[in-house]
Image (tube, rainbow, N blue to C red; front, side):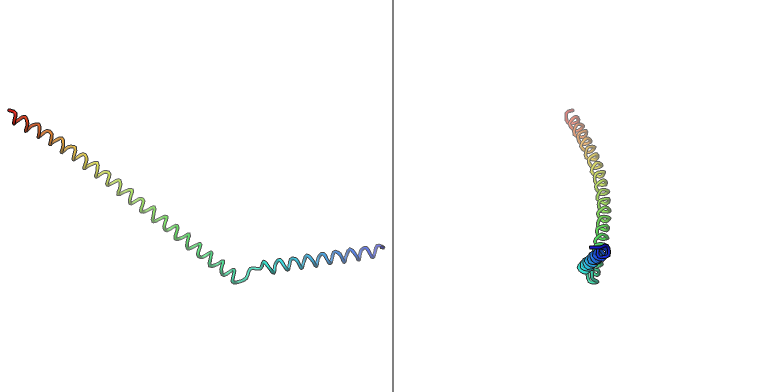
Length: 108
């Protein structure tokens, strides 16, 4: 095999390798190509995800507002309970004082 035959054989081998690579690339692109229907489906899924995230954010905001309202109501109820307990304690003390006074009056 002389030099010219070697160059031609190498060129043919490189050309065949190039053609095989190009064909493989074409096959990969052909099978992995995204169709317009798939893009439309992806757009719908993205829109649905966006709406779900907005709904979640609204729900979180609503729950935070309700929690604040309920905490406020609880604080008010606890304050009213303390006031009622203090009033009851004072009423019991006054009743005991009146009972003691009446008993002292009856004992005389």
